[in-house]
Picture 1 (tube, rainbow, N blue to C red):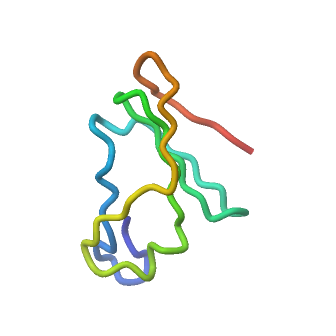
Picture 2 (cartoon, rainbow, N blue to C red):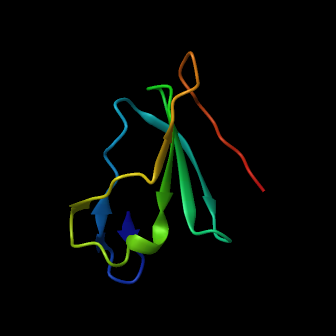
Picture 3 (tube, rainbow, N blue to C red):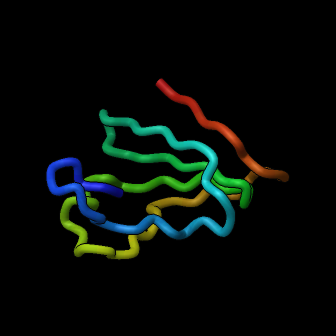
Length: 77
């Protein structure tokens, strides 16, 4: 994730095993959801992004593995 003020790499979200196809940010809960061709949805706590060391590898707080195939999009409200 990029820090918009510094324009530098803040942390790396590299837990998916295949291409990330979409993401959804819920500002109310500070959660970022990512979906991938690896058939998973991963939830990330964005409050730790600013505290992460430069180039830190951040782990998701939850991984959903219920899909039988690739996931290409996500939506929310």
